[in-house]
Amino acid sequence: MTSFVSVISLLLSFSLAIFSDAASFQKFPVPGKRSGPEAFAFDSTGKGFYTGVSGGKIFKYLPGKGYVDFGYITVSSKSQWCDGALGIAYMSKCGRPAGIAFNNKTGELYVADAPLGLHVIPSGGGYAKKIADSADGKPFLFLDGLDVDPTTGVVYFTSFSSKFSPGDVLKAVASKDASGKLFKYDPSKRVVTVLLEGLSGPAGCAVSSDGSFVLVSQFTKSNIKRYWIKGSKAGTSEDFTNAVSNPDNIKRIGSSGNFWVASVVNTATGPTNPSAVKINSDGRVLQTISVKDKFGDTLVSEVNEFEGRLYVGTLSGPFAGIIDL
Ligand SMILES: *[C@@H]1O[C@H](CO)[C@@H](O)[C@H](O)[C@H]1NC(C)=O
Image (tube, helix red, strand yellow):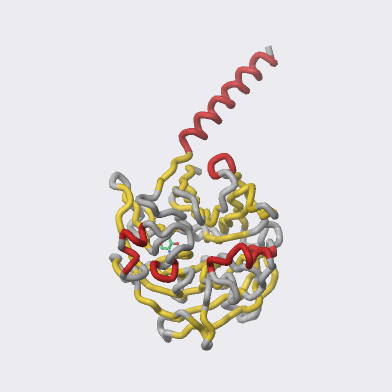
């Protein structure tokens, strides 16, 4: 009797698991020939999502309507020509948005464009305005992660490398390049400051919900650093965790104090085992969700939680993925 009941409950939970899995994952293919929804942002209206793709465009996804144009990095970004800009081709003409985040007080969308520098798209959308493409007279070369401090509006962003351009990302990783930087941009002073140098592929950054620190991923070193913004350790940095393999973008989870990190296991033949790793403010791993069955061995660049759903982005894939949590 016991075994009969347990077999039934096993079968039941098995079929429920299959059902919930099928119901919980959706693909949102990006339109045209564009690809690589690298990162996500959400506005205060709470409808849909924003994502930047190849060819220098930022799309807004509206439920029931699909993707609509929201922003353009350059005047060319709108063209058919940039629509066909596959991978890294024409990147310096069209742009290639990487990290994005809203200042929710002003409605402006800040963009770390990989080849073209720090930009801002005005509230409501349109053409981006370039803020800076260098700091201390040195070109950024390869911007990647970006976050806005929710308390002050200060923008934190990273360059993956100061020696290799975005087209040479594989070379940067293979040679264990450690010339990446963490910057801040203070909109009230209109100044870009270098905060950290000598980073190993800082692909992403995220400010804590109380604005006391910013986390910076070191993709190539499988490490996350913490840079203190406030308190007695302000201006200093320390190792935060080595528990996440090849961390890419880091996103704060509302005001919970926790973060999601996009992770892969990088091998000589490329990335494998893409997953979403949830960590707390002590760097402890709370949860790991494998997305290999949905994304194969694609480099998953960001996992971003918003209203009970996990948005999964990739550097070169054709769709954004959404998982119901
Ligand atoms: C702005 O609001 C959205 C939606 O609530 C949120 O996902 C995002 O993290 C906020 N941006 C910042 C910089 O706090």
